[in-house]
Length: 150
Image: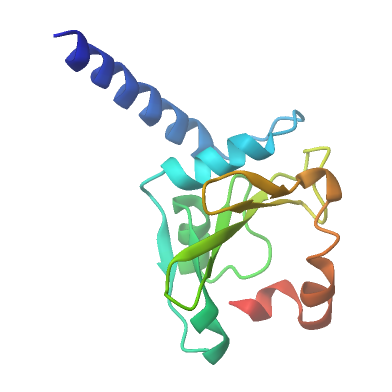
């Protein structure tokens, strides 16, 4: 009985966390890299972005429900608050080796151009923190533009 109660509480807490992540209200508080990692791994509302680009063989991109809805409505640049994209980097064996996480939060102290960016290894341990404001990501995105990646 105790295990069932514990499982029930965990499920309810998870659902509450997912619901809070989809609201379009932004706070000025910073979201931690660890929280972004957990959010990117725990939510079941993520969908994969289909692409025929040959460069996609080394990674795949998924987005949460907030971003997916905007994307389906034709949005490719100004995604709403709480949109999340997760780029899964793949090894030669097809297994995920790392995650690049982008979370839309203009009010966050670590955001750059309205996005908080962090990178984790395959276990969810942070390898590139949001305090860097995506400095290593800017070269690729600046040369082609964020929207051209989709």
